[in-house]
View 1: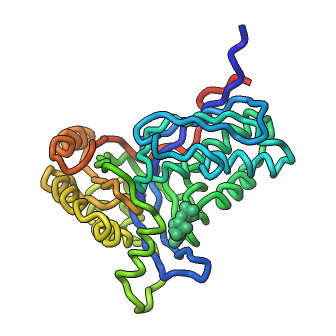
View 2: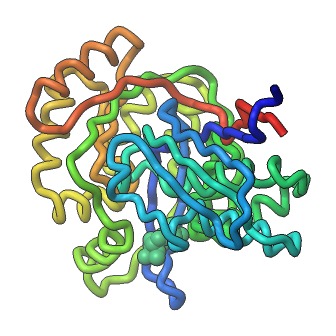
View 3: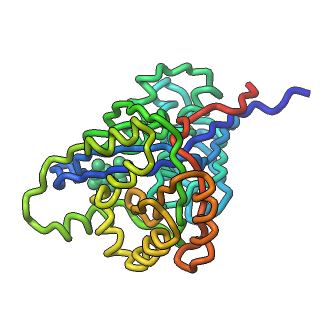
Length: 309
Ligand code: C5P
């Protein structure tokens, strides 16, 4: 018997090793110098054919009860804009198996959107050129293009204009996962509020940080990480206990720690795989986070891993 037609795409989470945030723009966004690094925590998005006129969505995994299953879900919107682009009906059943923390500052929703685009493109045989896919990703959200490409990249504009960055080795990270999420718009608003009316300098990438990435040197990268995330004071202001998580990681032997994106996940860089495993255990037992995960970076972007068509 032929297997049921299905396409499964694996998509990585990200950490922002630098997130330099400019002042608010007239359109409500902020210009960024956003150094994205894809990390080895993955969601899986599976697309199957359906007879309906709108995407049907199911979701499993930690935090999936907080994922909307209607047309507002970024994965459903991805299917709709790809179908519109090709003059098709968005007839698809999408299943998301989550491992990226929901509303955790690791681009989980963006990953699902990039995964849905790639899975639907394969399921429908639409063979959309890469540059068109990247344009659709940018319409879906600032972080979605990076979820498609993975690796490491500098994001300018609102984060959607990507330049690939060289990475000279494997970095070992531990992520302290929090209970509950943080709203990205709320964190940006808090950042603006904390800064007050003073003019904000143009966000620029940190040369020492890019050099550390290119060299694959965790000690040099760690030296550049403190204060690299302009959203960190805002995330700490909205979620003060994250300071305890940061303390626990640093006391537990991390080379450096920072809030991941808009939080509330906290990211710790370690010297090697053994240090990461030990720190994950220490953090999980610290009572300052829900759980902790050790993983490596860079990770590849959205990748089709099962395709029966
Ligand atoms: O682009 P995305 O939909 O992921 O952005 C979510 C929200 O985060 C935006 O509505 C905006 O409030 C904020 N944001 C921002 N500047 C950026 C990216 C996101 O203010 N560069």
